[in-house]
Image 1 (cartoon, rainbow, N blue to C red):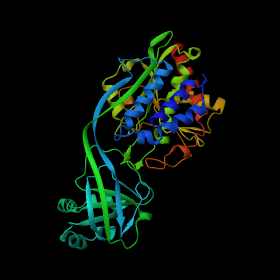
Image 2 (image 1 turned 135 degrees about the horizontal axis):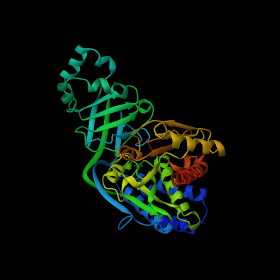
Image 3 (image 1 turned 45 degrees about the vertical axis):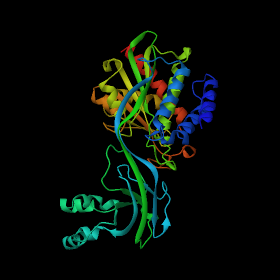
Image 4 (image 1 turned 90 degrees about the vertical axis):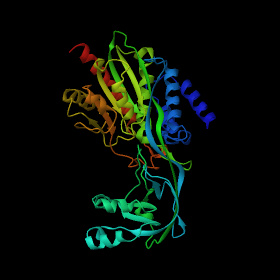
Amino acid sequence: MKLLYTFLFILFVASPATAQNMHRVRQTVDTLAGPYFHGRGYIFDGDTRAATYIRDRYKQMGLQTLGKSYFQHFSFPVNNITKTPRLEVNGKALTPGKDFVARATSGSGTGKAKVAILDSLLLTDAATVHRFFSESLKGKAIVYRQQDAKLISQLPQPYQLKLQQASLQIVLQPKTLLTTVAHHTDPVPVLEVLATAWPAGAQSIKYSIKSSFNPNHQTQNVIGYVEGSTRPDSVLVFTAHYDHLGGQGKEVYFPGANDNASGTAMLLELAEFYSKPENKPKYSIVFIAFAAEEAGLMGSSLYVHYPLFPLANISFLINLDLLGTGDEGMMVVNGQVHKQQFALLDSINRQHSYLPQIRSRGKAANSDHYPFSEQGVPAFFFYTLGGTPAYHNTHDYADQLPLTKFPEVFKLITAFAQQLQAKAQHP
C-alpha cells in the first residue's frame, strides 16, 4: 500500500497546473477513502497517515507554514474497537460492517448468551418490568429496539444497574447502521444490529468484541498558507476536516468519501489554485485540515484556543464538508447570520447558474466553523445537497460518490472569495 501511495503522490506532483482538475480530485477522494488510511481514524495510524498525505501535498504546492511545521499537535481520549467484532445468532454468523457494528462506546466481551427481549410493551407495564428485572440477567443478551432506548434510559436506577449485569446489549436499528467516535467506554459490550438482519425467534448468540481505551491519542491539524501580495495581515481561511470514523479491527473500516474526503479534496484544490503565481491573492489565505472533527470538533476547538495568528485578522472563514454531491444545490450554515455575504454568494450563483439553488440556515454546531463563530469570526459552512445517502457507515466509499457539482462549487467558492476581498478593499 505504501508503494501505491507513493505512485499516487507522484501523479499529483506531475499533474498539469490547471485551476481545476477532476481527475486529480477523484484520485484524492479515492486515496483518502482507501484501505491504506483505514477510515482516517484512531487505529492503524489512519489519521496520522492522512495528515502526512495532506502535508506532502502542501509541500508539493509550496505552501508556507505558520510555525515550525505544517502540524499543530494535540491529544484527546478515544475508545477504539481494535478487533473486528463477531456475532452469531442461532448458530448463523452475521456480517460485521454490513449486518452489525460495535457501538463506539462498547466495552470488551466474548462468550455465549441467551436472548432476553426488552420491548416497549414490557416497558410500559410496571408489573411486567418488575418481573423481568427480578430474574438474573447474568449470561443474558438484552435485545431492544433503538426506538425504545429512551424508555429504557428512564427506568429507575436499580434497573439501570441491573442491566449492567448482562453479558451484553444488542440494539436493533430500523434503517441503517450509524457510528461515531467515543471518549469513554461503557461497562457492558454493545452491538448495533440492523433490524432486518436479526432473525425472528432468536434464542442464543455467540459474540466477541475487543475494545481499548486510549486516554491520550496523539493527532494533528495540518496548516499551510499563501501570503497575500498587498495586505498579508488580512486573512481568508478555508477549512475542512480530514478525519473520519476509522474502523473496527482490520476487516471493517468507514471510508468517509463524502464525509469528508470530498471537503478535503476541495481544500487541496483551492490550495493548488491559490499557490500558482498567476492566482496569487492580495490577502493571505490559510488552509486548515482539521483532525478529530468526528470526535466533537476537537481540532477546530483546539485551534481557536491556540491560534497561530490573531483570530481578529480573519476577514472570513469558509468550512468545507460533505461536498461530494450537489444535484439539489448547496446549504450554507450561518447564511441567515451573515445575510449580506449570503446575498453576495447567492447573486454570484444566480449570475453564473453554478448550482440549482443555494439554501441558508442559521447557527449550527455541526462542523468546524462553529468554534470560530463562537469567537466572533464570520464564517460559512458549505455542504452539498442530493445524491448519496451514505453517511457514517461502511457504504460511504469513493466509487458511489458522484461529485456531481464539484467543479461548479469550486468556481462558486473562488468567485465568492474574489468578491469578498474586493469588497473588503473597497467597502
